[in-house]
Image 1 (cartoon, rainbow, N blue to C red):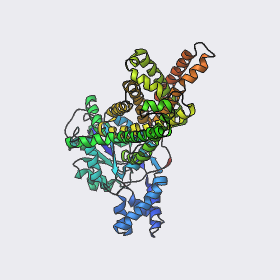
Image 2 (image 1 turned 180 degrees about the horizontal axis):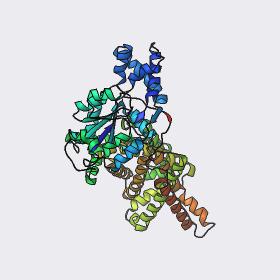
Image 3 (image 1 turned 90 degrees about the vertical axis):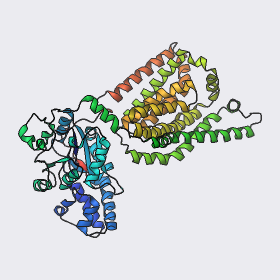
Image 4 (image 1 turned 180 degrees about the vertical axis):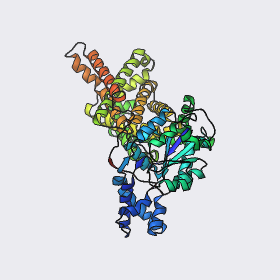
Length: 543
């Protein structure tokens, strides 16, 4: 049987007809061609929207574009959730995964909608490849979608190992154009006769019958005899572990040509260079301005911060604000570019992120101090002691604890991490972003400290899909570091072993936070394999 199985979405995994039809009615009303009978619009479930609007309504290409825009206006907020998963689909997908199958989705619907629907119904994590059309109207034909899915699979699998599953003739014809076989599902919107006439190699009347996809060549010979006439005789019933690992590494990164290396390096480093540029310009003018306002201040950075202790905090805050202003549009662009989705998020996760980061920061800082490495870099100690000495606590919290943290997270997690991930995968992205985060701080001590925290921040970002997670963690760490001496002094005056007590409490909080984030049932875990249908509103076809 096939090692890789691509599923259509609408009419195959989800029953999305009602949502699609209501959105089509909405668009037709806008275009002045209302349709009151929903049954007449079932033809919209399956094929690309643009072509179907032209065929059904007699629209020109430009008018069809307008109709699609109106359709998506309702679909993106309402229609996408007027949907439900077919009975036994979660069980089927779970069975196929247990048999070692590589699963994907190939839909003519825009990718952003496909991913949202799969996420909403807790199905997304079953699939290694999720491909749809583009919102700009490109890649709407089924063969184009399937070709993109095959491209993302790379050369690990031959086409004879890939099978398409869909409910319309467009799925069968698209698969044939790509040189792969197609299994039809008669419970969808096309029906058995349409699928058989199109050339489906097998037609399943129910989801239960699709479990034949999990069979080996030795099992259930009657059901899979049709497949045997078309596919090579193989005895494997599941992918070898090392092969699946190779596949995962390939689909999580892009294959780069030698000529693209420079572009990749620039794309990753650009956010940090912008931040550096803002810092240099603002620091230069800040020191010059301070030197002109305060006689005898001098021109050296240390001379300035010794005489004007609050200046370094103000300069850091202004640098962050400038970087955020310049880079925010790049971040918004990248969010759409990489289709970043929040997996799970609540105020409890936020608190846990803060607790975990504070604990790691404190423990790692104590280990660095205990190692004696600080004594080797005395210049760092001098700068560190002078930079924030005798400054107002509230000013430090606002400038360093909040503003600087937000700016750095936008640069190193929001932009650098996501870009590195798109080229090299999650593991390399964590390493690259944390290493650059350490280098950015400009000295060995801060490199060691920041790089480790950078790893934690990247993991939190990857786990949640929201930049709020590393921002909260970073802000909490900085505020705790700024407040540490005040807290210790307060405790020591009341308890002789106050600092030790504080460390123990922080470690316990950090341990509880890590447990909650990574092990507690329902928190930051792969969505549960629900066996019941989740009724809400949602879905659409290739539209």
